[in-house]
Structure formats: structure tokens, C-alpha cells
Image 1 (cartoon, protein in one colour):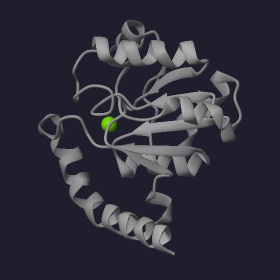
Image 2: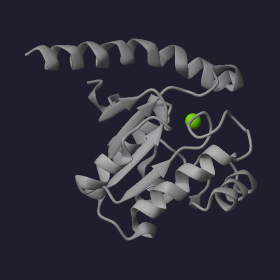
Image 3: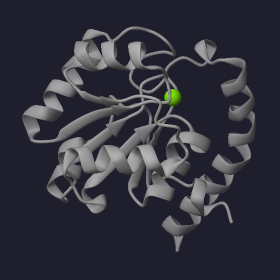
Image 4: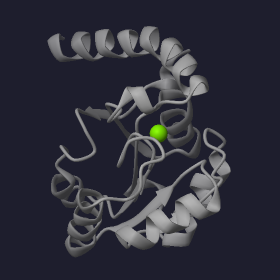
Length: 171
Ligand SMILES: [Mg+2]
């Protein structure tokens, strides 16, 4: 029953993943969560985020930030990085993610969502029927109390996921 909370893959950071390999297997669109995925919570866009977006666009990806955060935050972040954006995505509801996919003009099978939270990003990606990459949050100390509470609930699910992954690898 927890499969809907399991990511397709994990990485130590959104900055430490082989996106080019994903491109070679047909992924063409990347949906990024912003807070604690590309920058610490509520931090402005930085050079590292802009450089990643540029690299991905140069590779041939469509890149969009899909955030539950408000318009000013999301729009300015997108403008500074050169990514397209969708704010108030209401993750984990799949509607915003589906809208982002159709804005990119891509099929579900060619889109990957990258995020740091199981109960918003990964659940949302699974409900929308797309691949997901769970990354470690950049700076836990910037989490809001609400997110901190959700993290506590994430740990047992993460443990189950990692155990299952280990079993699959050994079988
Ligand atoms: Mg986040």
C-alpha cells in the first residue's frame, strides 16, 4: 500500500544525478520542485540552479519548476533560472503536474519529476503517472514546522522503500 509513496529512483541531490542518461532513455522534460530541492527553503535562485537549468536545456530538455509556493516566489525563481514555471501546483494532487506536462507538450512517459518530499512531490508524480527522483533536502533547518512534521512521517516509508530496493537488488 505504500508503493504510491515510492520514488522511481533516488539521488543524493538534484545536482548529483545523471540527467544525460535519462535523456538517452527518452526523458525529455524535467519538473523541479524548488524548496529544498534546487535551493534551501525560500532561498532565492542561485548560480548553481541557473547553471543546472541551462545545462539541461542545452541537452534538449524542457525544464519547468512546479511548486506549491506562491506566484511571486515561483515566477522570480523561474525568471532567474530560465525555467518555465507553474505555481500553486497543489502537489500531491496530480492536476498541477498534469498541467505542467501538457504545457511542455510531452507525454507522461517522457517526464521526470525531481523533488525532496515523499508526501508532496513523489506522491504527486505517482498519481500523475510519471517517473520521480527523490533527492535529499538541501537544508533541513530551513523546513517549515509543517514540513518538519511530514518528514517524521516520511522516515518509516523511506525505510520500507530502501529495504525493498535492497531485496530487489539481491534477488
Ligand atoms: Mg520541496
